[in-house]
Image 1 (cartoon, rainbow, N blue to C red):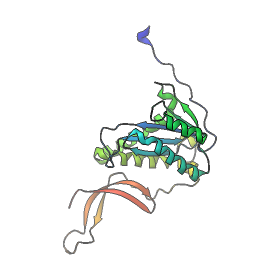
Image 2: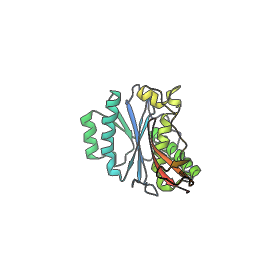
Image 3: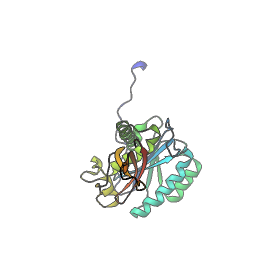
Image 4: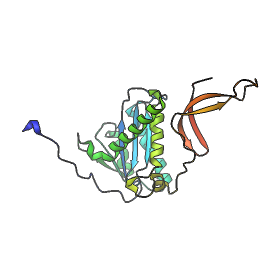
Length: 234
């Protein structure tokens, strides 16, 4: 009999939050096999339960999680004028420690912990990490990106995920549900796009005015696009 033991299906881990920041799901992924170009080894996700809006942070070590959560809390509470009520995570010591416990109690945040060896109870965060990693992997493979660009790919995946329709918020996007405005998408480009960079210093009228490049978007805003550029030709 013991050889045929299986786990029973898990029921819903809990009811949905009624308000923005009513419940925040969090999880950490890593260490990654390769360091990012910024030296990160870990991925931290923080997801609002009601809107499914996700924030991602790239960490050198798990000891940075507490500081990043405090930064996140300050930012999102000012943006939404709501307070975080519940933080849902696993039992990892990066989340469960004296300093973190003390801070949550002082801020009036209820901690919800999953039962050990049951990642299904933290399903929202687990699924988000899986989704972001899969999206990033596909973008990196299709663009032949170096593995050190994994953080740029994950960041792009989160950006796109926040601007794509989500079943959990029905007919609108997570960013619209979280911030209250429809996202602009006209500035989006394919990850690892080929482009021509104009060389304004070129004085020879008979030589090419530009160079072929491949660029990976890292911060995408309608009027400010940050990118990493790699020259692939002359």
